[in-house]
Picture 1 (cartoon, helix red, strand yellow):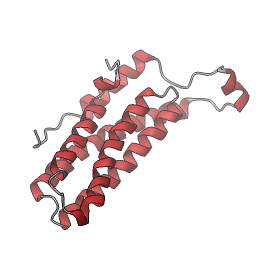
Picture 2 (picture 1 turned 120 degrees about the vertical axis):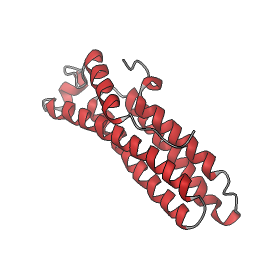
Picture 3 (picture 1 turned 45 degrees about the vertical axis):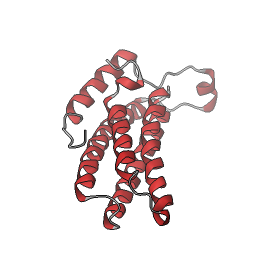
Length: 164
């Protein structure tokens, strides 16, 4: 049962990915690529932050926005890592390991997005007045959410990575 963000497999994997990216890219200290490398590092940290923010949101539509932003950041990170490899800023083995972990994060995000999309689709349309009055609850119960999250993490989060 996921009670806090630290219990979420997707958050754990996103944080590990950010740490791995920082460790691999900190060796790139050439002045001419410093801004590019810093952007890669910030993107990996922002990805993990978006997952945490999604967990902290109460409505399914807000969670969906955060998970979608995390997915976009993941694609951006994967693209920047591929460019960094082409520029010989990171080794091929490091890119392979980072890509593997990014794949796991992507699969977990896809599972979370599918769950949240079902919640949003199931929520009846509401006008602004009823939403402001709080007459509708858009999110699943805590036990339902924990049950689904456990299933998602069991299905999508069982891969091993070469990075320590």
